[in-house]
Length: 343
Image (cartoon, rainbow, N blue to C red; front, side, top):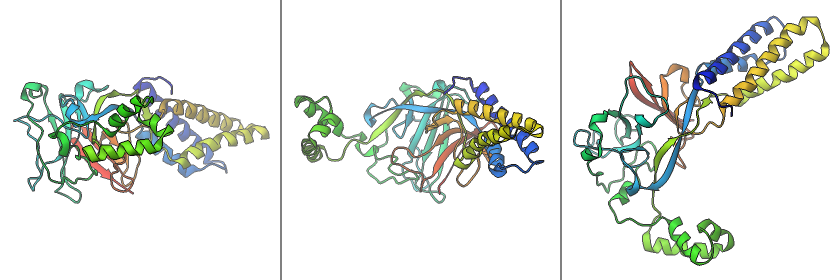
């Protein structure tokens, strides 16, 4: 991935849009073998391309999470002024994430402090979502209140989003991997995975002992420790990629004909191909969850929404419905909003 600034990356996307647009105008005057619909669709997607930063996180037991930091699916900050929220049926809400804005690579105009996203069991078809911002002067360790105690099943839009709450107030226990690794080292293996490779039966025996002793494995939470390098996020389909790749074959075909009438078109094809390769160089791997960026269109288009603040795909094995995704949006006029869709 090419190391460019956010402004440079967006400039490449805009340059590709212009190159395709000019090419389509020229191609409309000729009977050319290009997929006009897919190229026009790509131009639409390029308008919503945004630089994003994938979450970098460390998995750990809920008791070890720093509730003043950025957190995904774990215990977050509460205080007397900002207590643990409950839904309209008085059930505790489930924290989806907390983002400390002092840690993010690009600041939001008018937003300082921490942004929290909570999910409810009740309200709407799949439960309401609460997004609140806690100002810096209301956010410090001296104001921190305990994590709520609840034995109830809290079932929200994202499955098992708050399973960790059951064990938060219980005695700490090792994870299954830690337990088996400790035994593996005594057997001359560096960790649980190495033991599984050389002696699967012993690994299974130790796993059974763990279950008999501790029950289910520890439900891990995620401490967000930073954000990866910025890269351009663009919801480009496979058909749109193939339409761009076809341009190179078309260019070679026209060059073989060597007709003067084709020179301008060959130059336009060459420009589009060159900029497209530059564009691919600034995209990189589109990893999620991500700060900013953009998302795959399912039931609504990015062009009809405010700019994304967070883009979610599935989180581990947890999915937003059937193959869905979710987003937290932000604008100065509307503030924070949340939406999701599935196939």
